Image (cartoon, rainbow, N blue to C red; front, side):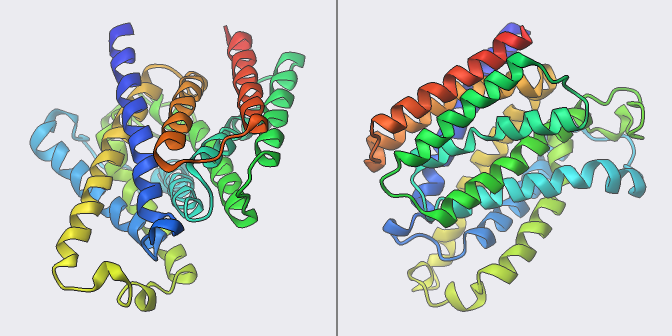
Length: 318
């Protein structure tokens, strides 16, 4: 199990870092980014659904669910995960239009604060002095990160925090669904529904994620006006290039989600969040090197406090 978790961690590390940099290059304003990030995100979700369906049919047929999930159970247990996961990814991609990757990465670590809040609220975690200290340390780190940002954008910051809230909630909900074995009490889920394996879970949730983000895009982006007149569609052949770029992002996201969900199934939401902290440091370093993000002393100390808060929380769990 240790070897499996180590390989999953490495895969998640690499794919997540590459995807963050890829999305910044794709959506960032300074590089003439795609004019409708939410639309493109919903198309990637559709592609991931098709990839997951093909994986279950041709590559991993043994993982196909033996029976469908009843609609009542789907709406109560699975759809909420898809909604918050879709909003998490959609808002994250939209925020990259306005903020740097390094700022986004550090601000997004506030998701563990929301994870703690939801865990307290749902009585999954008892309130203690250690957890309160860890949360305060994380909060101080977030404040320093925001104060040290030389290219601060209020809208981008709000989008990141909203995405972090969705992220914290989806970790709690995802762990509950993934750990359903032979009828988790109160969920109505059974092992035969296939929600214990990542491909089936992704195939089941992607339609909800795609629908939620697409509707949000229709209200927010006016893509029917902005996309046709953009440099992304100067020529009919651009459709194939754009489709290839979108498919590449979808493949990376699918493989990352597979590794993420499998790691969550093998460990816990807290363990994954702790591992993700080290990944965030790597992402910040890569962003500074590739995009030239300004990273001052306040950002550095903010990152140190964030790491200290995560370490304190991990010590409490051990």
